[in-house]
Length: 192
Image (cartoon, rainbow, N blue to C red):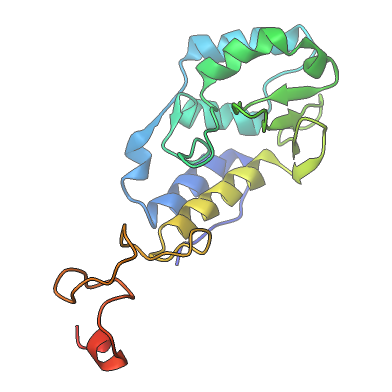
């Protein structure tokens, strides 16, 4: 079982990395931080609207802003969250920034996520395009996505209703030891 720890905002990345490494030890090696020049470019754009980069997001960028190892950028939902994409999007998002909405993810079907910026909030609420609540903070959004990663590690996917085997045909017991389709009787399934 993965351990998801609570703590202060300044320990966000250590807690997140520790939690995910508990079930995916290789994950942290796939993470690539954003370049400081990119972070400064983002800060300059936000400053035009009298905002700064929220601390929670800044910690994220400095740890995994170029590649988050599949935390937010999952294969199944085609979200793009790398800082390069964010910087490309911002020039066309003036209206959103004027309303205090900062788009930190992009999706081809316009299912994007935003942070509700304010001068006093270092851990902003995450919303959708219409400003509808998704999670109360960016930190909780990250941990929710970490828990989603943990759930994907299970051998059975409730969404797809299939086992770890790539095809749903019965296999011989010597071909697949984890497939629930192995064997015709309980005794045969328990024999391995």
